[in-house]
Length: 215
Image (cartoon, rainbow, N blue to C red):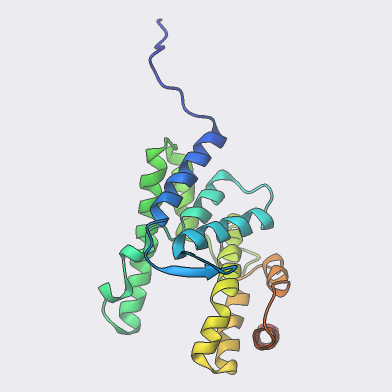
């Protein structure tokens, strides 16, 4: 048997993770939509991806590679499938959301194959991005999918809560929306949500929402 010294060895896992994150970030850096965080205007999906990744790492210091990849790729290139590419109304909205789930999983797979990930890891990333194993009860949900959901919810609270409250201008309705978010979160995620910095109005709405989840 002869050794094939010309074959390129697989990169170490940590190196491949870095390559994948760089590829995902490069894809999201093209987002024309912007979001301001800490006074800096940034590409929206690039920023959201980094924030969800950060929360996942805080919530689970031993997060698997697949979970970290899913957190980074959860909305990759989302702006390329705008809401108005589907019919108006709730039916069109639900079709759009369903299409996006598959689109993000496919885009993540394409990028991960490009840096040499194996089928098993890619399959697990797809499961997490698609939220397979997510149940109505956080205690029975796939633990990694639940951590992923917690990270998404925390970034929503950080980046969209106050803006949505101002747009709705209806504290009771907003409390019901936040209550639905809290119900999807684990106890650990809800604790992290309570510790976020809120303005006075948002803090009061969060308290009202927490009361609704306990009734």
